[in-house]
Length: 240
Image (tube, rainbow, N blue to C red; front, side):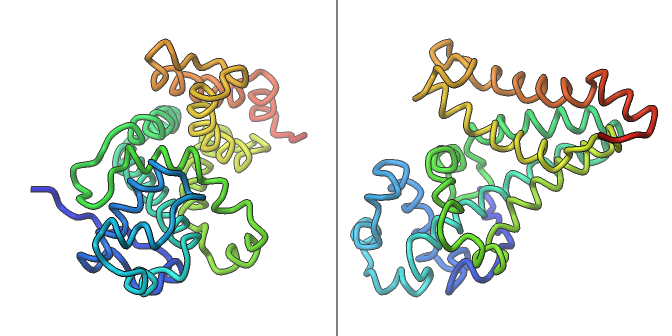
């Protein structure tokens, strides 16, 4: 029997933690399926209430609006992904191996449904992350929401990658930029390959896009970290 994993998320994302009740978990489970099927713009609490045979008012007891619900789903996903990476790199000393595993996990984990999470289909949620995540923070309220800590799980995942990068090459001048770029690449190139193929070298039609994206991330990261310029920088102790 699957174990319902509870992710610790910022309490400001919700009015009542949906992970704590059956109704809340139904809200999460069905909102994922509906947003994936119809898109975030067409998704409404009224439609969700009809799907789960409840009322709009009951949903508003958990989330003040659908934007906060989207932020909750994104935060849950990033926290789960960090959990998967932390688990896989535990007790591995070599930072290069840890980075390779972390980058591969960004892709592998997102293509499967974790049986240990009963109310979340991660593979479907990943498709929402790819298609809708920009709507979470490209908003007029982004600075206010950032001050409230609503993006902490994404930042924590970036810091996990950043820390490994700094271990591999402490003199590399762009560890945060590289970490966030790798995370964005992991999702954007999947989307590009399927919908805007001229923007990527990943061939969706070849049928092995997962392996292609993993290779892209690993080659990109180590191509920079092991480039002659940055290796010399590490050995000589100077910066740009």
